Amino acid sequence: MKKRKFGLVLTSVLAASAILGACGTKDEKPAKENDNASGGETSEESFSVAMVTDVGGVDDKSFNQSAWEGVQAYGKEHGLKKGDGGFDYLQSASDADYETNLNNLVRRDFNLVYGIGFMMADAIDAVAAENPDNHFALIDAEVKADNVVNVLFKEQEGAFLAGVAAAKMSKSGKIGFVGGVDIPVINRFHAGFVEGAKAVNPDIDIQVKYTGAFDKADLGKITANSMYSSGVDVIFHAAGATGNGVFSEAKERKAKDPNADVWVIGVDADQYEEGKVDDKTNVTLTSMLKGVNTAVVDISNRSKNGDFPGGETLVYGLAEDGVKLADSRGAIPEDVQKVIDEYKEKIAKGEIEVPEKVEK
Figure (cartoon, rainbow, N blue to C red):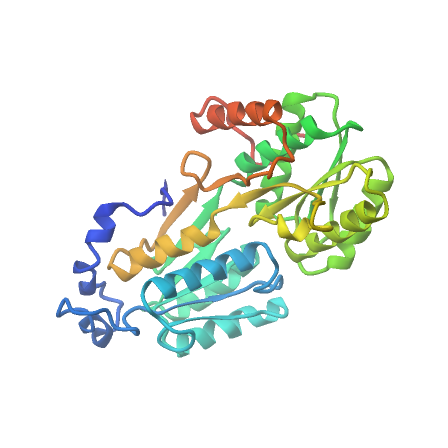
């Protein structure tokens, strides 16, 4: 399987190739190929896209939501409507739903089907093998199949910057990491956060807790309560909807005591709104952005234009603008931001290589 980096911004060459893209690949349905063959207005049903969420849900304010925003953006760009022949999603209540949902979308004849999250790997592997003429995209994991494009991110690079921010902003010298399920993608968040924090403060105290779930806000709240009560003043979560509980705990503490030193670093999407206590107070220090939405639009357009990167693994890091920190809205002072930017440049240039696993 080929693995290579791929930039998030579509080039003008790709944009210009849209007219020629109607030729498609051998796997595309002839009727849909011919919709654009005349060079006229693009048909709404020319290239349809859908996704299956993991258990975090499409409104997790994080990973799945970012992917769905990408699917919707692609649909809007091409004048598609939600539903068959356009764009859609199916939500998974448990891992038992993964294969069922994927097969459902295949039967509904979507041209490209996304599986969102590491937990979807086995289901994508099985369904792709059963449907070799269909195209799939897997986010955050890899399977070896010519009809699947794998999409990975260097979460450790963005998390490194989050660690720098947390350690520099902490007044207590204690920070925390709340992870979801103990899997490689979350390990990368964990490893980067630890490396970044220790780069600017080797003596920093870092508490780590994996909740074992991406859809249990109550576990996130309990974990955050324990950490804040022990003196932790900045928590970075990589736990999907479980992380909503971290925000809830921080907001409750801040509402009760406006002088309380409690911050949350969000994940995947800009979670500034999630940290809003009132019109003047917000507990979101920043968020580690992961360009899932942009990658979805990018790959969907490539596939529509007959350039489906099946069998490849596309990797998005700092150098490709695939991960970064969100605007802190003034929460991070200029001197700290300068340090963060210096590390960002070094990582992007390859001067610092951030490990994917925590070094024991």
